[in-house]
Image (tube, rainbow, N blue to C red; front, side, top):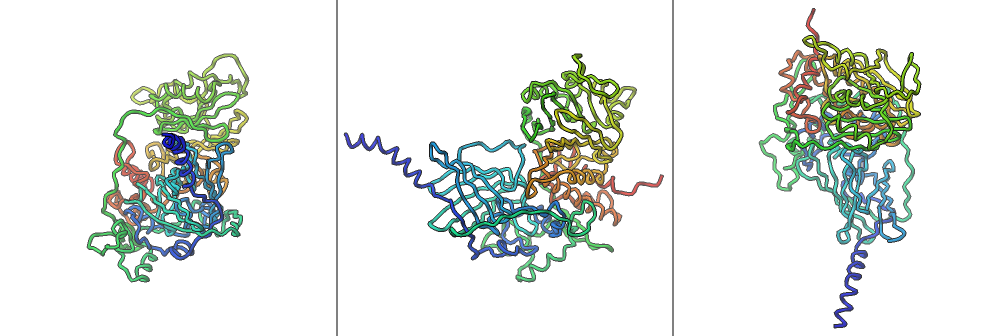
Length: 606
């Protein structure tokens, strides 16, 4: 009986001790072993080498049209490897831990990768992953737990990266699961990447390192430079069907293109070339100028959520005095400080009753200013409700003066926003006068100074429409873009209100001119799109690249005299449809392509 009692008393302690013992110590300096994947870890894979990758047609098309000259422009030069590719190399590691001084438990693991000194943190304290609207980074957000002597790591919030350094993409919706294992002086990591946009199956890879206590990772500072004279907004890419480099790898290794083109079937050791088409759905059609894409495959259908229940608004701090208020369907940007609150875009009218209490959770100061970035209903629909809830500074002859009079908050916008809202349709103004802007500008910019911060309204002509503004909070280093940059869809181009694809591209290039990343194309100036998560310069750059590439494809067809129907049939957006496209709702992929075509096509005489 006494023996049983002792066993019962000490068994939990023994189990706890065993669990603690099972957690391996990953600390130390580790150098990579080069006995496998030398092409990946050294000079890089061949163009057109997609062997064994479970990629879909969209990923293959992006890879086939990719051009390494993309790194000739400053905005691409300081991109480090993302967390899922960083172990390929140069990938010596330095690993250390944070330890709670009371419990002596490891609360986080820190990893520095040799290439560009990317610093990664794996949290072990049970914290949840951030909001879906939080920024994405190269290293993502990682949490870990021990399963026996294996550290299992789950990573989300990754920036768009690459599966292979020859153009095979991995979207920012990809996730990473890793298994870290140490055996004596050897460290092995098994990696599993899943991506609903570009992969049809999980991609499994592994790497290993050997302990080297004397190895030191050298400091690395990347400074981008203009190395050659290039046109403004230059985006390097091949038109589909024109990349002659794709022929070299199949000839070099003596394999058919159906094999080197990859795909889930090629992951199997039993794979044999079959008559089924495994190449890109884009095939060249020779013309007198150059081959361009003719495609017939359908794209993945992207549908709206089946659950019609509307999620509530949530407020996220961005940086400085700026907050994002969103539920996913539209973004509102808030500046809060001692003088009060400034709101950029007031959501749709049916959201206005939720927006006012959402602001009260950020600050108890009154609403002083409202800015509309365009005349779209989800930018100005809540104007009346918010302006009535606000309390402005009285103005007289353009000079601000404090007053106790509870006047309504003024609404700022470009004058074309007011013109569109006040224009009569069947004898009635398009929008009720209570929602009209009260302060407008017609020049290239307008300035405010509020809460100790310079605020600029910058006009972006002929972009989404003829009345677009972006708002730049200089001290907080944040830009609110409105409809010009929708990170959840292809850009909305309102042809009827003066929108053009070239205007959208020029606006994105201007935003890139303003933004300055903190380090390695990450952080620094933050950018809040009209819809979608908090972004930085890199996110705007890849969006600009996407719009430019699609514009160039449509322009090539127009130069050949192709009709809109022929361009639609070519599926010029196929490699981006899984991320930005949809076949439902008010702005479909077909409408986007039509808007691009109509804004580029020569106008009829007269």
